[in-house]
Length: 85
Image (tube, rainbow, N blue to C red; front, side):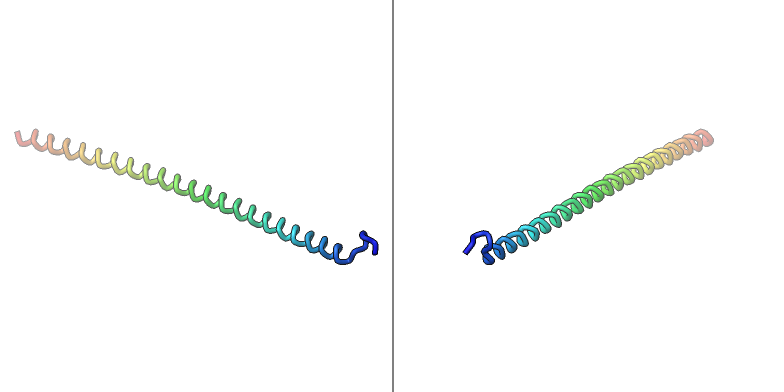
């Protein structure tokens, strides 16, 4: 029997090749899933940063508005006190 024409060895080689291709496909799928996960995490981080910026801007606008309102009340109070003199 010739070693090069061993059907059992040929079948084993084909089985090994199939398992190797399947493993390579799984590795590719896992790498794609990891990439999608990283992109999703990056997108969520950017959204979180945008929310923080928006909340900060709103807080600053509200603080300015309160300061202006307070200033107007003080001016009104001083004006009224001046009128009562």
